[in-house]
Amino acid sequence: MGNTLGLAPMGTLPRRSPRREEPLPNPGSFDELHRLCKDVFPAQMEGVKLVVNKVLSSHFQVAHTVHMSALGLPGYHLHAAYAGDWQLSPTEVFPTVVGDMDSSGSLNAQVLLLLAERLRAKAIFQTQQAKFLTWQFDGEYRGDDYTATLTLGNPDLIGESVIMVAHFLQSVTHRLVLGGELVYHRRPGEEGAILTLAGKYSALHWVATLNVGSGGAHASYYHRANEQVQVGVEFEANTRLQDTTFSFGYHLTLPQANMVFRGLVDSNWCVGAVLEKKMPPLPVTLALGAFLNHWRNRFHCGFSVTVG
View 1 (cartoon, rainbow, N blue to C red):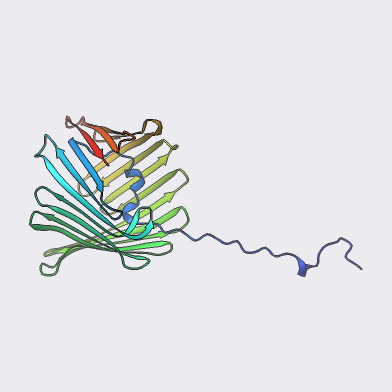
View 2 (cartoon, rainbow, N blue to C red; view 1 turned 90 degrees about the vertical axis):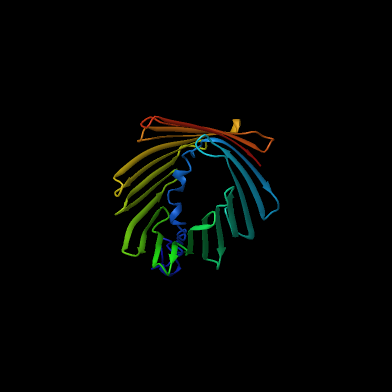
């Protein structure tokens, strides 16, 4: 009897190709877990500041900063930066050397190197006039879906003291990242370690991050309402200091007016805001900020001009 239903034989049915899943992304660095939320909050401003940026070439640029304040003596900072030819992303160029020196001779320097395709190294030095205060060495390995980092801070073989920090982040799904931080410190007569667990969930318009450990907790929530409005909420608890802080910040962009407004309110009865205004076609940016602590009855304001 023939195939009266007109069905194809089983052997001739088309087979569906297996669905290819997209590989998990790299989770980035541990220090950048709360970056989106922190960028919403305004930076503290006090006194009058003038910043002049000058690009000398495609690899080298300098900046001169003069700061005058009622809380201290006037200061001058010289900032210099060198960027190499190896660009992995719009914000990552290797090698990179950054230095900042003030009028007293104190220096902050940072060197970033790309040792291999996935291995990065960073060295940080800080001096106060002729004395070394901090020297730190970082090594970071970025896999396809994980990041591992080891940091050595102020290693002293003679004094038998060191601070070691290990970070690990793993992308569990395309939205969920889990990891941890282990801080170990040792000096004569004292030794200890602190373990912190971390998690980050990224949705289409919001990001939630949580760090929990024996030293306390740090939680943040970032939400992008639209192209102009962003808000952020932070909660920090320190078990050693027995202190808890809750902060709310917002970021408002007005592209037609070339203005950016940032504000904050926290549980310590502090309010503050910074208004930035660009002056095209001139390469000038004006900023005005004010901060008020109701609890301590302290008020300070600042004004800055950035050229270049």
